Image 1 (cartoon, rainbow, N blue to C red):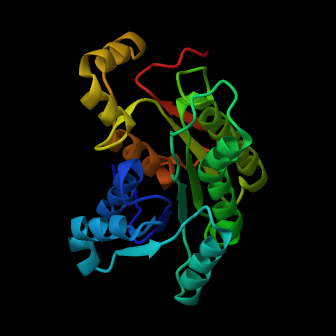
Image 2: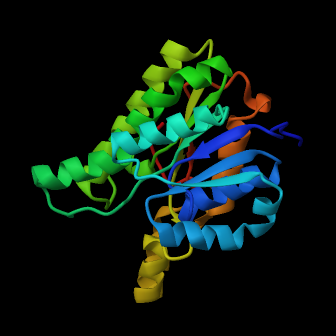
Length: 256
């Protein structure tokens, strides 16, 4: 299926590792122009090494940005606009599943999770919405099934991802005639060095027992599963999909 994403300008937050990296790489494979971001220089250097062939073709741009800091997002926008780069697709991927694991997280823990998982996406969207309106663009938020059901995840993480779902739905209603807005809600995705990878390293038997007990397909999802879905719903093939929250979890969630 041809998605006609050639030369579309795509900004992916938190895209030098994990799911974000594979989303960015997937767009590059479609011929899109992708802005890859990280707050860490070492992660950018590693991504540059892995994506060398796209650098040579001038399809990929690397920007050091801490999306928890409003001024850095604003500087990124100014830099892109000054170079006549207006984004067509915004993928709000940045996030962390880390948390305190307390019944009542401290205010500091709660705000820290909200800052990374929600406010960074909120501020990025707020700053780039006019560019997206101009281009009849797309926004895709990456959430989590922890936003839908009670799962063994940090409370602050579940709360911040639930905020993402709500924000996405509101935006889709307000901007639906100009910008399509959708949410991808992953389940248990295995990516190199992520939390599931570490749990497998620590106790493979116990970890796989949890997966087989809770996921009807008896396996982890892959980063490519998420990247393919994100890419599809931001393409013209999904032109009537707006305000959707699409769960991709192997059948784990049980809500109707």
